[in-house]
Length: 141
Length: 298
Image 1 (tube, rainbow over the protein chains, first blue to last red):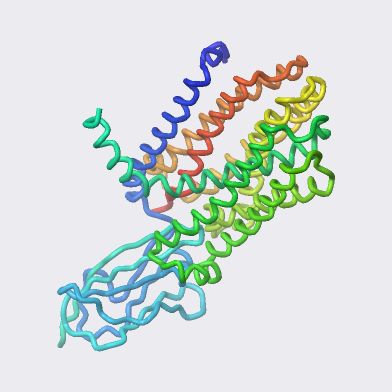
Image 2: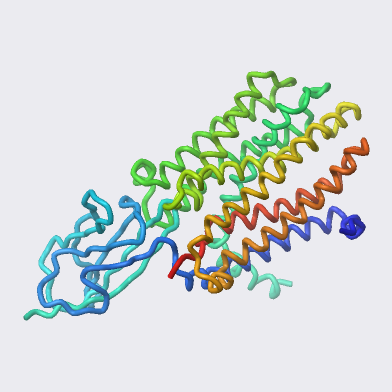
């Protein structure tokens, strides 16, 4: 490598180089966020009950979420809102002991027929926070 | 001029959440390389005749500031991302894997900071303090794996943590040793400076390849489950490629400096600054990489 190229840098231009590099990286990271979002994260929702975009005919007792790897329970939040935007009362998320058990949040009151949106947020072991929403419908028989 | 500046400020504020976490991680890396560098130089070089130079003292205090600020910033950012109030911080730290990793980093950072403060205030640093510096530096290198991608490796958790710790030791010892040696040799007789640079050069000859090999191994572990060629379009792989290129530039500088040292010439300050600048770019990329999801199998 021709090191004479580097000898022409002065300290001031070095500072500019580092600052520019930082800006390029910051821009690349901001641009990478949508690209990363399109890539499936290592912690992801693999299954849910009630299932997304389905119709149930009996009142659901809880929301159960299965993830691709062990999610931290203490960082998990599950909320359900009705179509009018009112939050449905729910208990704290819990998980039964055992491998591949879902995280479960129980409804603490009666669930009226209607369309509901489930919003969840959780954290993987390395601190990545992932979240998502989906909807289901309850139709009384 | 006002019209030109006005749109920049909202743009910077909008960018702030994106860069806050990488900045906090970068602070942690800076603190780690300072403590690893000071520990390395303490082991391989004899004590400087004039005691701790003012430049070295400033560097050590900068490391202390970074080590104290970074864990607190990371904790606050994590609480914000989880929308958890500060009152629930103890629950997060106690009951989550990330929280336990943070406790390890926080504890090691605290002990390392204390050692750096004592080293900065003492005219001469004895064997006991050097031993404490080495232990706390190694503990910090191991603890950092608890906050990175290695912590979530389900297939080879122990291998991932070992590779991660070795990579931190390699990079931190190499770049930190370069910085600390440069700062320590600025106000000393040339004979001691030359011996210090030779000692560092011998260490860097081992640490740089260690950093490179463990960096490659870490990349392989992260990308083992990726679906190719889809992964080539991921931000993670692109950033990893950028980091690899920058590290090669740093290696080239290091090789040039090694030739100078072998010719009994002290490395030029300008070249040291240039090498450090490129190393900082690699650290910035690493700080962004750690917060980026590696591509996985669909």
